[in-house]
Image (cartoon, rainbow, N blue to C red; front, side, top):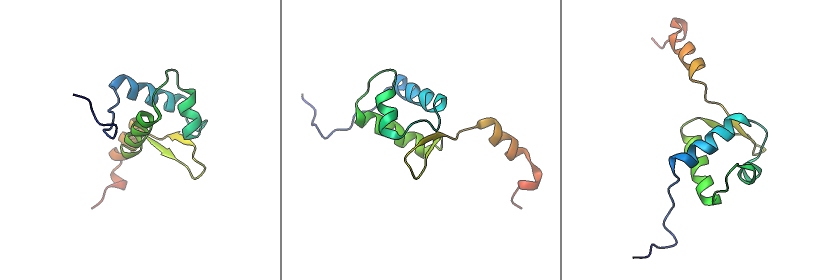
Length: 90
């Protein structure tokens, strides 16, 4: 049974990790389209956009006004600030 061309493609975990690692290692170096063309393995642009949307929603990356992709996820820093009593909401 053929699938319709409008069905979205779900990226594999391997693809998500590849893009995530690349974004972390090259934070602030690439705009979205340039990043896609510089990945170590080629992926469909639609799949790449799906992963970028996921990374944005999960607050792992941010894209500035110029379109540059920056890695912002830092669990150690988050734990540090969550442990501070003076930053608690009362």
